Length: 284
Image 1 (spheres, one colour):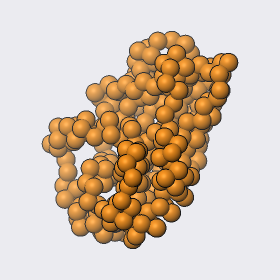
Image 2: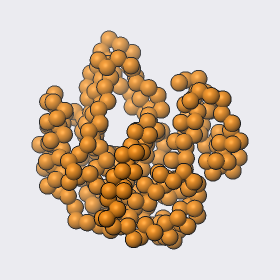
Image 3: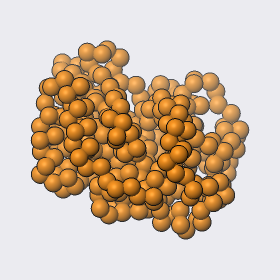
């Protein structure tokens, strides 16, 4: 039962997180960026150990496309809140329920902070669902004290210094322990890990929490419903299957991923990704 999870489970959860981390990274990226490192780079850095329960990782994207074709990066977001620092455009991004597209041109970089599911509630001070598909300027959430951090993160300083500055800022703002926050995080991780979870009823039976209680918990701390999270992670699995290039068995995939039939799977994929599975394979 997740209701009984405590700090003694940290080592098991850390091991599980490490095992799944690379898979989760790949799941979010739908189209590959320009291959040349001088044109596009993506770095991910761990936070300080004191912050590991709050922040999954820092990410830095830098690009130099001067004199080259612009690039539109497409991702399929997960149930995480991100704080993104960029020159003249630093914002907190709530969970994005659709596909996220960002047009890149010229030369610039962004520094992002990916919070663990459920963990941003303490900083926001209200239900995370109020931020879903929305953004807020970083100063509206963290106040004027964030200006110093912003100045470092949008500058041309070394990435190591950026990470140090972010660690220093959030170490001073670690919120008190909240058992509901931890519970929300662990339930999302259960969905991530257990590929047999295809419905909310499956989740209710697995974690021993009532459906309405789960819905309230997710609305307050995660920002989206349990059904949305389950559907999103099963859709990631569909993306990985279609990414392989092999001709998929749609009927079998639909059954294994919890869809009513293959038409439901294909329609769901196209409505969110923007392409049919066959079109997606051709693009890749």
